[in-house]
Image (cartoon, helix red, strand yellow):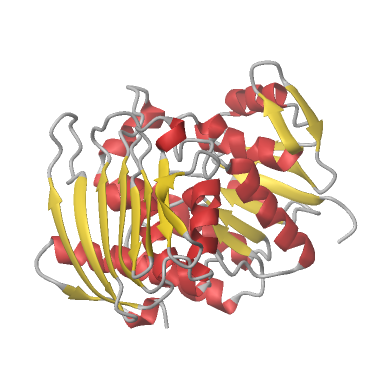
Length: 371
């Protein structure tokens, strides 16, 4: 593709949608929302915005300088737009699967905000649509695009820690909820899909990515909220057994935390890696490796940013969306976070096994989701 990729966003007035739109519209140097400064991308542009409130759409178009964006209050009408190559789906969680399936059916490349779906039935429906499609797809498990995770994954693949025995990934994420109608839906399981879908899925994605093996058994215990009035359990402790012998522990809490707390530990026969976000930057990352002749010590250059500050404009949205744009322009599948990739299918299998286990007992994963 020689011309720019024309991208539309549905759910375009949401907070994450703004950062994703800027990632499409502007180059790798980014966009400053405070000043409105940024250099336009030569590879992609926002050509359509869709949401229910036309006034908010106009505000977003003006604030982000989306000069070529046509405004829609009907998703079906936006899908009819000529020269629209790709869609970012950023609607509330319970609408993800329907909007994503429609996007693929219309022949558009798909970038999907997490979660994949809010019911196992919708997950299977969307998975089948993705598997049948030749289009580029991606789900935005954003932690996998941070320096810390990219470099950790690289070291694991090089064998720096020997044979991996166990992993620990937590994501304590006090999700932002105002009293506005646009936010209170996050308190309802029917809208969100639950706490794993809202935040703990990020820790699951890290565990699955590092294990790089089929999950075979999941045990999950959940606990009710302690501070805010969610109508579902907000804390999950998930034990995952992988086919290659790795044991993964995942913990998540979306009700409360000390800021945003994503702690990671990978233990192997020849080394260990620890990421503790509350430590000073100089000691945030500690690791050792016998093969690399490195004693356990701090690595201040390993990760220069917090995995999730809570500020959407500091997320790795630009890195994530630009990889999607590059793949879509080249007609490539995404092997890391494509909806039909082994990685994402395993993540979905763990999520739904954990949901069932929380309701009672250990659960073998559902092979139809990942094999």
